[in-house]
Image 1 (tube, rainbow, N blue to C red):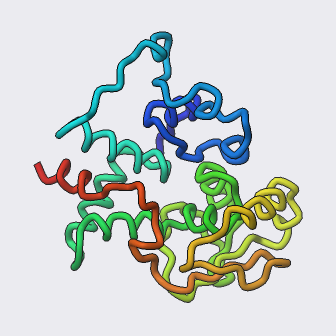
Image 2: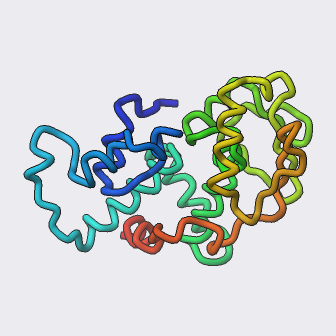
Length: 212
């Protein structure tokens, strides 16, 4: 699958807020948002005027923000939306739950990686197991009761160890827990609920955009 390979800090600046795409750098003074504020990227970013977005512009920016948070492209995002629309319940909440249940997101939220990109790489390279079996598909949907672990050899990787220690400070969502810190074994306690997810996401705008 194609991936965005340009500088990710410009994506945060484009959205005007931290998307935590750069791992540990996002928590340090070197973060582009902290250094330059939320001015848009590019040569004329400082002079660009941020008018208040309305209608389509507001809806589009919200969709782009969520895509960038989870690190997925348009085709896959639309497929998630269509699946969410077929499910019972509120479409916007269904969409966010599907995105939260992605294995790469769970690996990130458990603290095995400092960013979604790093988490996706761990999964793709076969460093993650679900219920004792290797799963190398980042979009794999976890279920309540699943055990998500780092392979034993990988737990000794200094990058993974550093990420795991850093995650202890930022906390973990209520629907996930670390059941064995020494072996880096996490458990999916339940499916995520809307109150467990990013409160700054306005999923109704995305529903409105795709419903046109």
